[in-house]
Length: 272
Length: 81
Picture 1 (cartoon, rainbow over the protein chains, first blue to last red):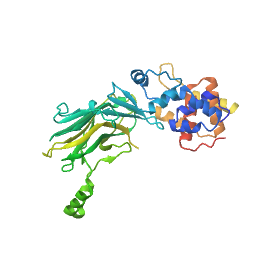
Picture 2: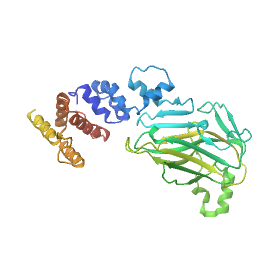
Picture 3: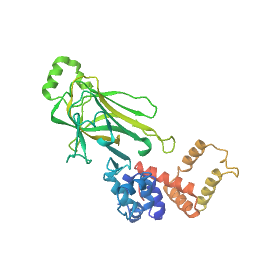
Picture 4: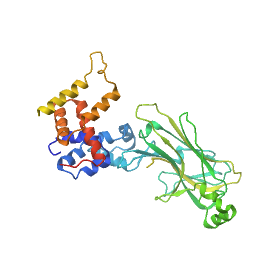
């Protein structure tokens, strides 16, 4: 392999993955040089990256590799309404839509929802539910903004406050719809049942374990929880035109009042 | 080197593009299968094909050779010599 010139090695690396390119740097000086070249990282950068960079930061980048590394940290775009990020090893795109970027029914009414700047939020503001009987949250994204040929999952980023109420009685319905496709509806509870209530449910339902069949929010590593709304696939690059993905969570069947849920946004990330 | 040159010529003959824009008699799937067979050879021949394609500026052959090596790297089959 050492007899191949750098541009050939760079061409080879450009057909592999960012992960392989990072790890091949220790093979030989030629690999390290080729692995640093703009030719390789230009291929790994998502298409349309120049437009994203120009609107979010005015930094000058000395190389495409440096630009790639920068995009691996979260970048605020669209006037702070969205976060863009690429996964370091795969180069796949992740988006986080802020609560402001979502459509939350009645969120403009301050008796029902309260917007505030929270230190634990990834955006400038998050929204907390004060009281409602009609919970409906919807987010939209274009498949063209994401990586092609990828399975994606949509997750509602949320927290439950100590004085929350009405969240664990009726499960919410979640669904994801791509273009004119059908929607598969899933259900999930909005909060995790505490141990006492879990015991009561198990006593009531016996071995049928009704509770286990329904999903609950999952704890994340960043202090928030997430509810999976659904999953979808992006098509091949250029093969089909851009489609709109609609992701939604509703809890409108229970007539009880609910409150105490905090929404930070919806994360759209590749599934393993 | 003579072997490499003859392989390059063999590749180019297979991938000739006719004046009216149609590719040669084979369909795309057939060409892909032929390419895969063509690349089933030893490491040193693959290297030399890459070098030759790079020198002669034959982009399709260069990309085919590089993609073959890349696939082996990704599948951890490549033992670096």
